[in-house]
Length: 291
Image 1 (cartoon, rainbow, N blue to C red):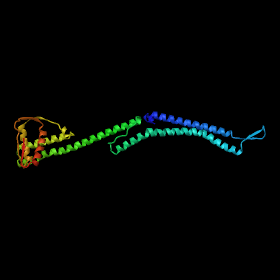
Image 2: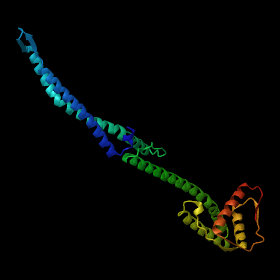
Image 3: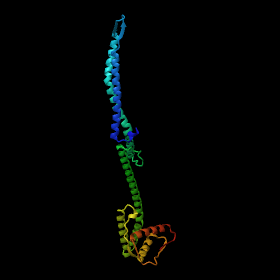
Image 4: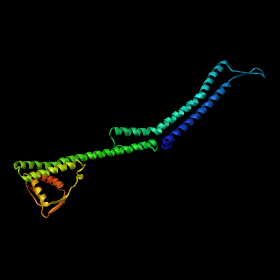
């Protein structure tokens, strides 16, 4: 049956039907010939008696003749019934063998895979498929399962990236909001201070740009970089203003000797610097030095 397993569905169905019908025809022919032979044997059944040297009589007993007629009619019926029965049995046998060797395993494999997919369990291995049309269907199902698994993992990875991004987003906004709160406190103490107003405007713009950028990216590494030429003394002045608000209990000094201008994204630089200053303010005991 290994050759049948390697055949296609149409070819396997044809040959199984052919050989089973041929077997049925042979058995039916044997049964037909046997019934004819038995009937002819019954018709020759008689008794022969010798009366004289030259005289003989032959006759069939009445009781035996009646039983022979019934058996002859039964054989006449079986003569045609058995070949039809063997042909029908051949077709049934062909169907049984075709299901067993060509349909049973692929259907079981597809059912197994479908149950796994319905249960949302995509991390499984399909059994080895045959080379016929149903085997191609099983391989196509396996390809679909692998693609679904890959998409599921991509979605899980994107969700994890989004979760980390949201956590980073909340963390990154903490220090600018703290600076804004401190600036509002200073503004309440001195409403006419232009430097405090400027700082509120700068940080409000930065938060707005940061929120807009974070809404269009999936990872922190995808944040756009808008670098430009900036004077170092400007950066130092802004860092000193930030330090005054974030580190209220520690002494802090900022220096930047040896540099006049740098080329960078001031918003990203400020976010990083504020995180470092905020961490330093939480853990430093007396003094913070920024260089």
